[in-house]
Length: 168
Length: 168
Image (cartoon, rainbow over all chains, first blue to last red; front, side, top):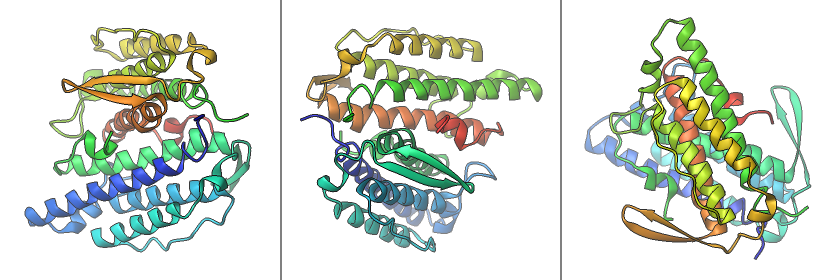
């Protein structure tokens, strides 16, 4: 089977969301076991001008749903970014996974040259579907997933590379 | 043009290495401007049981050359992991880029089902070329690239998402 746009996108995005959900379950359990307020982790950041954990998780969700929708040529669903607990972040990730699972291979396959236009800092950036997926969406997904992981590792949560990668 | 294994691997690995090289140039300049010993950054880590910056950079290189070589069916070049300065890390990254640029599309294209066997913790893990690239090599590349970035951001180096993504 030759590589397809669907295989190079939806299953990877879904796996990223599911791995992040598993990592957040461990973080919530760690907070409870150590009697640390969950907000300490949810608002933790690696530098004063970097986003805290909650926002990293929201951006993982945004990256996944935006990529899936744009490649499939459907409207990007809008979520309100109001999460303030581990449970609400889990709900956000689950909602995003459900959206991704509703995208059929036929909607995404053949999107290599589909024009994708993003508004970034009031500028329009034009991509082909392939350049958008490989050069923008996936690197962004892994960036925010790794940053969420790093925030938690930095704060003592016992997670490892296998939690990030999932089952290989 | 349908998505190809070459397009989904070598240019992304090369770009990751080049973006990391640019980030390390900024870190070296920052260390010099602030009169901070480069070793402070090179040995910095986000948690006591995480790898320091030097090792993160070596693993980015290892991931890139390992992925390129395995998909192309050639021997993985071995580098001695002795770098202890920004200049030596730049050399390591440049050597890795040169290796990647020597891989032709025809060597990698069609490797979707090529069997890839990795030794991990004394166990053998079997992948198809496609599963190895998408589920293991690329997520690992971005993991260690992002961790290197996060170590530097955490330590005050002025870099941003654009340095991580490169030109989009």
